[in-house]
Length: 235
Image (cartoon, rainbow, N blue to C red):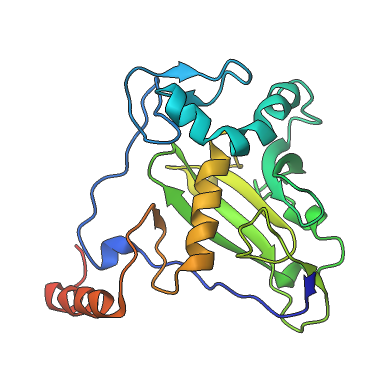
């Protein structure tokens, strides 16, 4: 099934503009469990040696999603095409699972996500960013906005049906951001992306850069906005 509808998700809000926000979790050298975010009794996946779990229960809960990238992560680490290549995450309608994809970055550090959209004008490719507070990097999602509705974009089940067509995910350093070249995504990226896309597909309320987030009713959101106006802008 395809769709010729346009899609534009705008830009997320900054939660700190509306309420005090606890500082993001800063995973230390030992990391966090990929499911419950526990910081103790961790073991690395025996396959990829990248993702961490605190128990067999958490590992089983993530098995279906992680299995799609586990082996590929191990092999991709050995085949970087060039020094300017960065590992991105590709969710495409024609593939039944997420997969890694190499993208080049130019001298300014900008990734060439255009290569994943050969039939799309550069200006039609839009991005949305978010920072999962359980990861040491923030993520940027690119998609075809199809503004003139000229292309039939495939329904993307891997992307939780939140976005049609190809979805490309690139990682950036949490401090340097866009001022530095992108980082390699890894196996921990997928869970954060799927959770974010599920939020996008199943929730019509305000979306924030800071993730994961609460889901607010209309009444709750109106109350938050009123309190933010009383408090005034953050210093």
